[in-house]
Length: 97
Image (cartoon, rainbow, N blue to C red; front, top):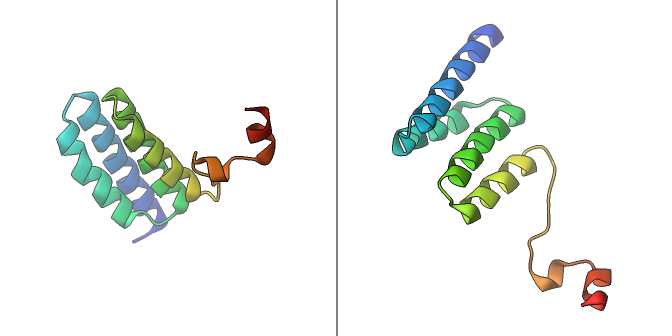
């Protein structure tokens, strides 16, 4: 597939997934997200899908899933945050507590 075809197809499908969840068809958006993640060629494209999932989860008050989507999307761009467990906190923060 040519790059222009891929770009157009990806853009149309990501817009369709966004329309699904914006119209309240949350469950219909999930398979679209999965298909986009499976077929995305670039990390930035996969990250965009995770961003849409993040927004959908946040709108549905699914905050742990929101954080998970955010971390997954950022990890694709080599941005990694430690988890919030006390053993992973910087030492200076524990000395203040």
